[in-house]
Image 1 (cartoon, rainbow, N blue to C red):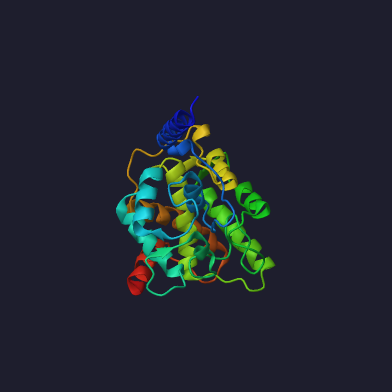
Image 2: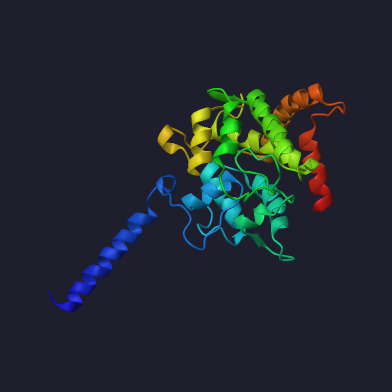
Length: 269
């Protein structure tokens, strides 16, 4: 075979491979971070980067990146992506930036908080690294189905443990609301958004592997997910959480955590 013919075949083969690769189902394309890539404290955002719905490097994520990625991965409306981006951009230490990287989210007490469901407190280690012991405590409070009640049980348990083990434990009102919102979000996205229930197996899979649980039968939700839905379900988790906190605390808490986030965002933006 002549050299020119060989190169022609090689180029054609490469083009065919590239085209085939681009046509692969992104839900089936997964690779963990490479050297130089970054990840953060949020299992979902790490998962989206591992699938390529967000930049695989985890860096320089723009509002368009987040909006497109979250829509394609889990059917988020643009309004909720904008809502989340406005909070995330605050973690970038560069003034007036138009992007953030996943490791920025690990900056303590900006959005990242103590009493994580799957990370140790910043005083004790790295918030961007999954911690099996922390997650083992969390999932020990879930039944086979995770819901608002046992989701709140797990949150309160993690708070109690972290208060005992972290001499610098702190939790702002925003951090408290985000904890509740995170639980509402993973139940809604992976499970039934109306009944607010999800199979424990799906949640464990995503947290431990940082991969979408398609091999367990999960599919991208057909119904768009909006800020209103998130905040409605946040308050369902918040109501259960308030019952547990109020039963052991002298200072009674209201359950209006969605309103707190809106109030806080209004002051910031």
